[in-house]
Amino acid sequence: MTTLATTGSDSGSAAGDTLTRDALAVLQPGFDGTTAPDWVRRRLGEGLASVALFGRNVVSEDQVTSLTAQLRAERDDLLVAIDEESGDVTRLDVRSGSAFPGNHALGAVDDPDLTRAVSRELGRRLAACGVNFDWAPSADVNANADNPVIGVRSFGASTDLVARHTAAWVEGLQSTGVAACTKHFPGHGDTNVDSHHAVPRIDVDADTLYERELPPFRAAIAAGTRAVMSAHILVPALDPDRPGTLSRRVLTELLRGELGYQGLIVTDGMEMRAISGTYGLEHGVVLAIAAGADAICVGGGLCDEDTVLRLRDALVAAVRSGELPEERLADAAA
Image (cartoon, rainbow, N blue to C red; front, side, top):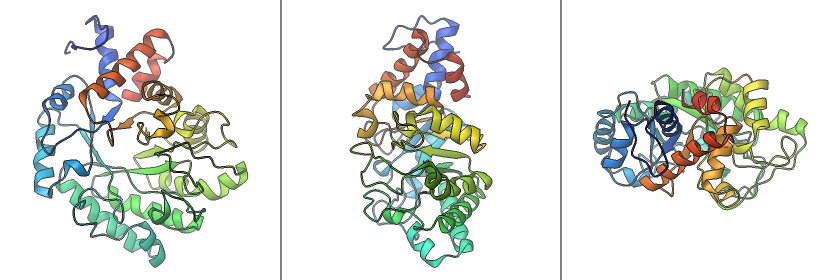
């Protein structure tokens, strides 16, 4: 194993080395530029297992293919993630706008075969570029017309409609070898606040949540979604104290326990103000892993090496202080 040079107090011991590797393995960071930075390539050799691409990393499909090849030269089993929903949220077509219909349009047509075909073609393009992990689809039921962040990213306001198209989207994408990441659990559709800026709150009773918000996620799980993304939303009916991303009740008891989900749990962007402005970025990351998250999405805003090292060291320190069980970090890394 590689002994890490670190900003923290690693001793270089085998135990310390395993901890730092595990802490790097749970991070899914972004970076700047259209070629692979030296610091990213170096950290891949030290345990980093995933990176995220944003619009700033994309010029053309050929360039993305070259970029992912550079990264995989350092680690061939690398997860390369992207936020490619089609429609309004696109990274591959960031300069021109997506060539594919988004969820709202697909829901309006209401042909699951078309949805499956669109996501299959999108997956084919991603796979050809070396991207194998997509933070999509949005399984949120657009129950609030004033929602400032979901809106046309949802298949619609009907739970059954959203559920069948979520499953079709997952099936189409994953048929190409690209992992789907169904979001934003336990459902971001009935909010009127953008979690980029503050903590949204959904004041519905548990029955409404189970009947309206959860069926699309059940459908995605039944369709085999390889990942689920958590939402930075407070749902008092589930947990009156902590937003979903930081809630053991939401991630471990509900998603893992009640819904029987066994795949990867990824957080929404941790520098969003709902987390960073309320709990602090480092402490939020520790709480998310403790709650049951396996991968930390960061890099939409903060995309530098120092952020990665700060989060790595915060996780190591939390294990050493007893705040975060070592077994939980190891499980997440695995």
